[in-house]
Length: 252
Image (tube, rainbow, N blue to C red; front, top):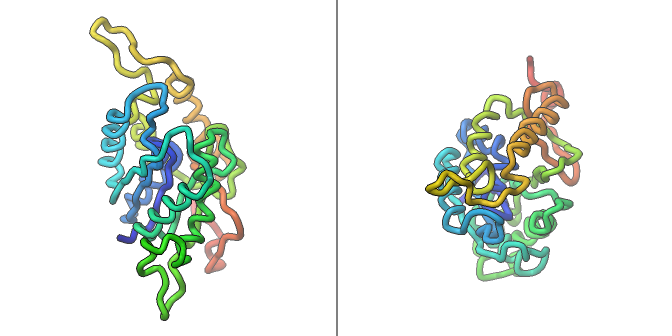
């Protein structure tokens, strides 16, 4: 299988929360994408593995995700180490994306920082046929260079990044908010019991203030590009331009 975009997500909900706008725009443009959840989110304060899986399935129906897999690594224990890099290399070789979306390498959550740190080495190693050779079939051939993703974009952490690129997601922002709310165990008050009382502990993510923050954060990045809402990304290294016209920006 080959997809245009692959999201590397430490936990179910990270792809939607951090890259939902880009994925919705990719869906509307007819681009293909897949999501790799590294863990099942079993360390989450609220919800369960089974519930998170149902929430992810609901989000995939909105996104029309080509495929979503879970590596079932240990939530809260990810490290930028050999097991994680091998798992990411196998995922990259399976989906052969042109663009990879990964967490920012300096994210405050250690699982996010681990996946962000491992993404670039894995993107290089997936083109080395002697690395994990059992999954290297078709990586290299006599008539073309080895397969490697063309680019990695690093997505936002909770507290904001100094963005290199900001994608205008104004047209899909409200749908992104609905997409995020597919994860009712993580965002919002959660389920209530038969007596109408809340039965899920309060977290920073489940507070109404977080949803206000999410809207304000996207407005902050949107303001930087003269748009209502924006989604920020970082890159390592230069971004290639193939025309002078691409420097002129969109007509408004």
